[in-house]
Length: 500
Image 1 (tube, rainbow, N blue to C red):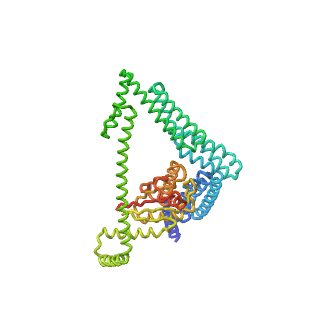
Image 2 (image 1 turned 90 degrees about the vertical axis):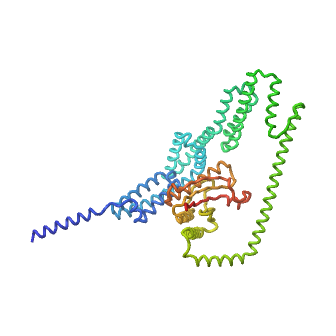
Image 3 (image 1 turned 180 degrees about the vertical axis):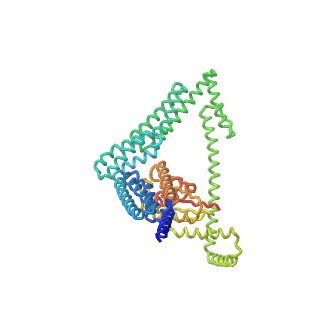
């Protein structure tokens, strides 16, 4: 009897050990799929990272991530109580970090504006070490906010703004202004200052003006670039003048040879016009003759353009008449369409694979169209593709942060993308004509990129299916002279490109 009891205990022990051995560690995907609270925190961390909470509340964000990872590890090893406790702590830590980030965003608002300008001017690439040093000091300042030390944080704003602004100016100068300086140096090496002193001096004056503009107000970058471009033009012109004069010297041209050379150049220009320049008259008559020939060509082009415009107007009038005819026969058209629909329904079993795909596509298009109300987006069908023109985004002025109030709209956009599995998504940003074109283009690129990144980070859309581009104010859909028109022009468009 004792031997039987010992044998039984041994069998039970082996069975229990085998049961424990079969309790395997869960994968990360299994944990997130089976634990809704952890899946919610994972998505919230992605959104927080997207909104730069890691920049504006670094300690809190890192703490939230570390606690979240502890919760995931506990769930992978089937420690339910520890998982629940750590998940609650991670959620609370993230909420606290988001609150601190919002405080930092308000406190450092002017700093962040200047920082964005420095980034736009490519300071992180052109002056990487200096930029990282300023970023480190910004990190220290926002950490003071996390510690509740707002006054010391405020005291650091002026220095941060100055240093970011200096980086912006250095980056701007390293662009077009530096190119102008290089062109002046090359022109001088070609003896432009000696042989064309007036033209070369004008180039130097334009270069000086470009630098003065940037030193006085770096936001006038477009104006400075214009002056730098003028400096390049005059410098290159001076260099070419020098080459012509040196060529005259090498060939030992007399004054008459130079005039004959000048007249030969004019003859080559006039040749396509079919003229015969009156070199037997004074030079003014020669110039007027060429002006007349060119004016005649321009007048002919204008007449051609007028004829084309009149033809277009006639076509527009015919199209208007056609539209009126369509309206007049609307009832008849509806009757024909109803009859056609009946015939299509009767022949449904005979539909080809291609027709079935078209019907399925239309059903998906109708689903996407029903997702959005007019204030959010307009949905268009473009052949086999779908265009979403989204007006419902609310970005902070001059920024590309996707704030929480946009999440509901982003969820609808994710649903639209998911309705067409495998489609390519091209995201384009557009602004109104307010502000500088270069800034508008960069802002539209950033906003389009942020929307595409959100679809990847939060919506799980594969990166190879996504692309983004910004057009600034170059593709308006309405006038920029009214508030309503400008509101229509501020938009994000998503083109869902289907392969079949």
